[in-house]
Length: 471
Image (cartoon, rainbow, N blue to C red):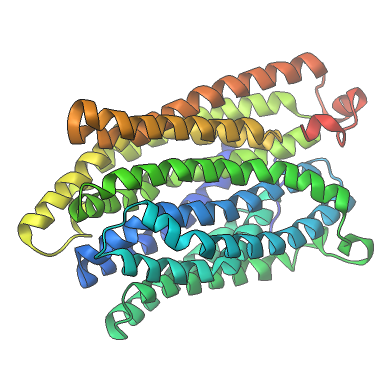
């Protein structure tokens, strides 16, 4: 039986860690098969293929992050309904968000193929890697409905407090993907298309695991009126999800600017940044997990009216994030050169230069990793409160900082300036998010006071289904 979890009671430390831990393990498996993808491409197909895949990373993220944004945005209201114990509303929200997810998948699919070649040309993609990048991204984009299915189903499970099923789904996907990577790329010699196909089939397996689990959860089993698409709820869901998706779109545009500049430095720089960015996922594993945990925790407690628990949970999450970031950063500094070297093969001189570029970039990110973790903590907390506008504003801050850094610093300090765009983008977002969170919490305390000690006290102050939950 799938285990849903109510986060409105119990120790915040225990709740956040127990929820985040399975997500971390799941992300480890996800990153493991991503690393295997890159190792197979880099060592079997060569530096040119690795550069081609890396050249498409930000465009890939631009498209897929929109899918993730819609799925995460829909899950916020699900968590709030569950925390408020409004099971009728929960079923209506689930049915409506399911229909919206199908529509979003179709829309994003059309958008992806419309922009694929024009954007790669705008990036001045080198001619030797252009057709390889197109092949890789075409296969990935064809699987957008599969990616939407997994992201939506996993976000529903997380909103209900279940972080274990996404773990099992990711383990199954990882095993499948690694096996198919070896089969498609090495045995069948399908090139980068084989690596992309292996990833999509793995995502399909993970979606199937999540779907099987959701069918067992009584509180969202659709029947009767619960199956009806609700236009009013759809409007509220889109109000939450659109800033989410737009935030990711904005961040991705900044990444495309970075890719445009890096493309001007040649294939070795592209390959070096690709190798380092493949480890970005390892750096970010715990941050994403803490973020999902806090979105669900804050969403459920906000729906239940437990304002003091929100404050405790966010402060706890921030401390956990800083400590975890310091530990992961230290590991990457000490062992990062060896790890990035595993992606790279070919001419010894070219390989050594590529490893040097990758490791230098990795060290800068590792040193400032707590900045990234605070970004995830405060962004997710605001989203749990139903505020997706200020997180979107933080995406604008990332875009501005990333773009200004990559365009100005290389002119002032040479190639070294390329490596600071990501860190300064994190810092710009942090300023917006941290200030926004404390201003918003001050407003909530002023509006509802500190008097409520329980859910019932809070509900006497205001109807939890009214505007304070969906601002």
